[in-house]
Every structure is written in C-alpha cells, then in structure tokens.
Image 1 (cartoon, one colour):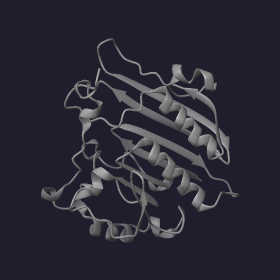
Image 2 (cartoon, rainbow, N blue to C red; image 1 turned 135 degrees about the vertical axis):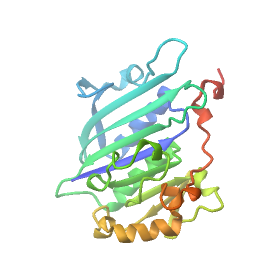
Image 3 (spheres, helix red, strand yellow; image 1 turned 90 degrees about the horizontal axis):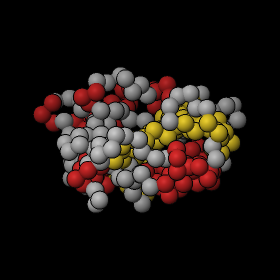
Length: 240
C-alpha cells in the first residue's frame, strides 16, 4: 500500500536553507533520507553537508533554472519523493513548484494522526496553494488532459487549500475543515483507506457542493481557478 502527498506552490524554494528545513521536517517525523539524485534511479548517498549541490537549480546562463531533487529513505516507513522548483521562468508561463512524497505502508502502520501531522507540516513548509494526501491507487495524474492541470484534480482523503482559494468569495468547503497557519485542511473519511474515498457518487456530491467549476467540470462557463500569481516565479517577478 502506498500513500501519496502532493502540493503545488508559487513561492520561491530555491534557497538551500529551505531545502534543509524540508529535510528537518522529514527527520522530525521519523523519516531518514538516505539517497538523493537529480533523476531516476536514485543512486547517490545523501550527505547533509552536501545538500547545496543537490538543491541547486540547473539551466543555461541567462535563462530559467529548475531543480529536480529526488530522494528516498526509510524510518517509520519506506519513502521516496521529488521536489521540483523553478526560478526566472519566462513571463506568462504557468508552471508551479511541486512537492510529492510517497510512503510505503505495511501491515504495522502509524496512527492516521501521524500521517495528517506530516501532511500539515509539508503544507506549511511549501506554502502551497493546493495539496492532498491519498492512497496512490485513487490518484491517476494522467487521467485528465494537461489543459486541466490547474484545476482541482478530484477530492481525496486530506485536501489542502491555501489563501488563494480561501480568499475567493464563491469558494466554499461543505465539510468542517481544520484551520492551519497557511490555509485549511478538509478531511473526508476516518483514514486514507476509508471505503467512502473510492465512492465516486459520494465524492461527486461533495464536489458539487464546493462547485464543479473548481474541478474543471460541469458548465465550461463556470470553470474557476484562483487568481494565482505565477509572476512570483518569473524573472521579472523576482528582486535580482
């Protein structure tokens, strides 16, 4: 069984100190990073003192840079993941930074609160405008066309929404949500393997209450995404 954590953000993650704080969050949760690389397969041993060489952006001089930080390890459970961040993107681009973590869950697993606590910390670290936690089998990133990548993909066990969503007057969460420093977390089901999370009728009913337009579904005239400031990652949007 595998659990997916996924976050989208428009904040600058390029500083190595931010990279170190990410490693610190994993380690404080009992997840020790053992391998890193810039591509698959992950072959290099992780050494904390060498983080800067792995967290550096790559690109041609005078153009945008991108970092692919792939990692894996174990502790409370085996895990892997990828941090992708951008800097100095061309104007009008709509790329976002992304964080994905995959946990392998065995028969002996931590309490659901532990999984949510880790998700909350990653949401805060990333300053994401959107994120979720879900069983890997319930999320298919290729299910929808690329044209809909900025919409909410669907509903999952834990659903994170930043202020970009919450500040929209027509965005509503019909299920009680936890207040977090950078947004809200809405949980559906008692745990990530609750049968209700595979019930498309139930998920669709909650999505309808939120508004199908936020998912890029229903009437095309009602499609909605927040007023996202992609310029924060453009060359012109940074203080050089």
